[in-house]
Image (cartoon, rainbow, N blue to C red):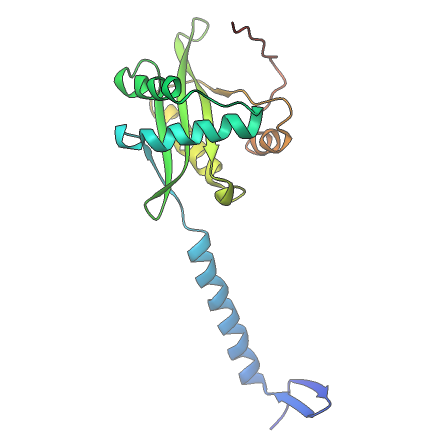
Length: 189
């Protein structure tokens, strides 16, 4: 039988014929497709509801600690999150689910633009669980929100990012957003 691939070894010679070689290649391709389906599945992105509030509150507390070393008062953040569900003019939460588990959330708030005679949507309170990061979840959420915005005639999306969060800035730039036009200033008591 003719050999396609020959390897020398101390115990002898291993010979794979052409048919076995192609069977091995097909097996590896199918195996890689299987693992891609397991890990590359699209998240379910949906509008959040009140039953998601406790998860969102937890995410916001984690984000404040991770990004600013700040402990958020649980009673204040709870009232703040529930206020969005009680008054849709304040904003709207979205979540990403992986196999029924919420792995990310964000809030959209509205800024009136007299120049455009329309609202601009702001991304706020973006949080992805650490074990789910760098997997394209925010990109999927962004694409979902952008599609919703286009359907509703929203002319633009904005977000702000903590100035030292370079990884997040790179993510936003890779998605076609830029921070070239405005600087952000704030005052809080």
